[in-house]
Length: 320
Ligand code: BTN
Image 1: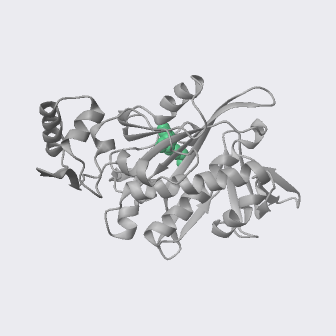
Image 2 (image 1 turned 90 degrees about the vertical axis):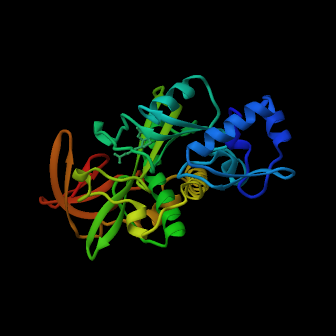
Image 3 (image 1 turned 60 degrees about the vertical axis):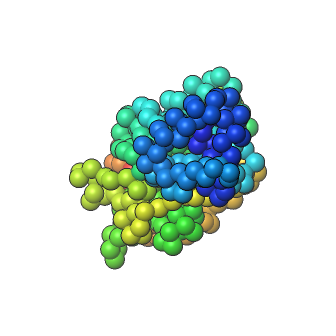
């Protein structure tokens, strides 16, 4: 990870000017310039002659120094690249994956200009959300990779529930929803899996996660989507939320690698908006199907009882 001033400054205690300048390999004068530039960007930095510099208030930004200090994972987010703006963190992560970076490496952007959603959709990604992609190198068969998006939705739901005291529901396959009014749900997060594979083995998976946190949503999305700030009524500490998401993701992923879908099927089904017997309309690029929901397959598919009484498994598409 590139050393920058923000990754060395510590909100918990002052760091001496001498240490900062030494770590950055710059003069004290250059350090003062960088401190002033941060102040102009909205950071409140206390400077005391003997003690040094300490961040008192940060703008709503992901703070690398905190992540380095507080991240408890083995690999997820340990190598984290934070960029101000990019087209899509999926693209950045795919380039890194091709270069051979290790599992758990992640790319996060404060803003995406061409965020990607499922099924070729665009993903609105203005400042204030959490937009990141993690590189994975699982040893399982390529057919199982799409379940990683379902695993991610459980990890995100648990992080949101713990951090903001809300209850999340899941819409198959990978949408995380929040109940905004009785019986009315809006989407708060989605995840996307892209991979490079041979016929029977995976070279890399890039798992992208988008969470609407403190960002503002464009008008056309406000009926179907919601931010965590709106549902909780306060500005969210995105760094804390990211730390929680990384640790949940690592745990859910680790269990999935060992035990497959069974490892999180219960947690998924419990939060699912689908209940047995519910009328479901499934739309995928090639077909529209109607049926009664009769459960999740062990491969992450949904099982629908069709009108002819026959049961079928479906692996992709949108449900309503
Ligand atoms: C969906 O629900 O359609 C999936 C949304 C995935 C969005 C995330 S944001 C970070 C990563 N970069 C992207 O371009 N997309 C994913």
